[in-house]
Length: 117
Image: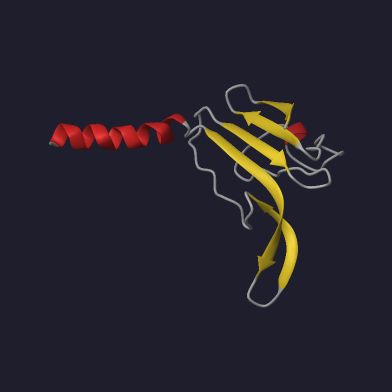
């Protein structure tokens, strides 16, 4: 009985463990309701604020950010020390993420790459 329970639990956890180092984010128009007013804004994965990404220093992580806006955007990574070319203002310190484009940051190579959606 114990072996079956442990095997079943591990079976449920393995997909989560395998994907722990990859995060998929979308940049979207969202409605922000503060309780005092409602405004259109920018959110991540359809929400504002967006999700918290948790990983440890040295862990290999891949973060895919797809821009669903009609304009160029960027991500400022709180808690990650990155070269300025990967973090900042589109067109100034960061090339930006064009509409429909996906930006991928990988910790193992400390490099960015862009792929079409």
